[in-house]
Length: 129
Image (cartoon, rainbow, N blue to C red):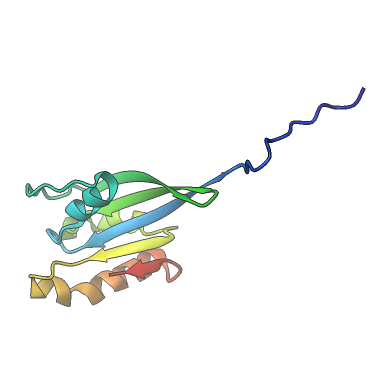
């Protein structure tokens, strides 16, 4: 007797699942939390709370036969969290740099934030502003 073969129904292709690490960072009160909640839950709240340390969000995205688990790490913008932030830049495949378009200082700090991400995470991440 031969080994039994498992066959998939015609037209069915097994989907793959991959995980992606994305960091979201920028100046304090730039709107990182609101942006991420909008992306994850399609909701918006006018309440604002400053992030303490790091927040983690997960969203599943289907791309053809590929199931992507997007793991987003929101990094607090306050200077006292640098020692926490610098650990999360490592191994990120993507980076979302957020600034407040109504705050010129937030815009002017973009270079500082980009440099911090490169210093602690390298140049391999795809970064968007």
